[in-house]
Length: 133
Image (cartoon, rainbow, N blue to C red; front, top):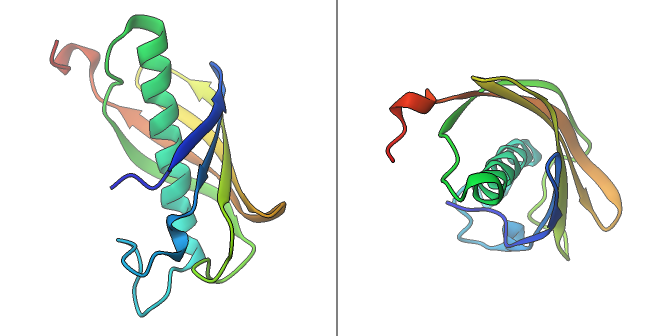
């Protein structure tokens, strides 16, 4: 499942993405005929993963190390649902801290200039020695 349709731009510490699939009745996270705002956390986590993949490809032409989302912090949802919103969602994610085995990002998701969700997420990265070459 890939939720983002397009990368608008990115650099070593930031990424901006766009998606319009939140209105799709067959959206994989939809339940009870609704897509709730809490699912924006998954959009934020996937923004981090896309950024990691682009950074890995740009720096060494390799695949990004696998990661596991281990924490969400300071998440604020400014709406209850998103399936009724016309137009695209946009996300900005920023790499805040990076260590050998972890990363922390902040994410903000907007619709038509209105902030829908924001928060921070921590990822534990797979051991680099265990990655296939």
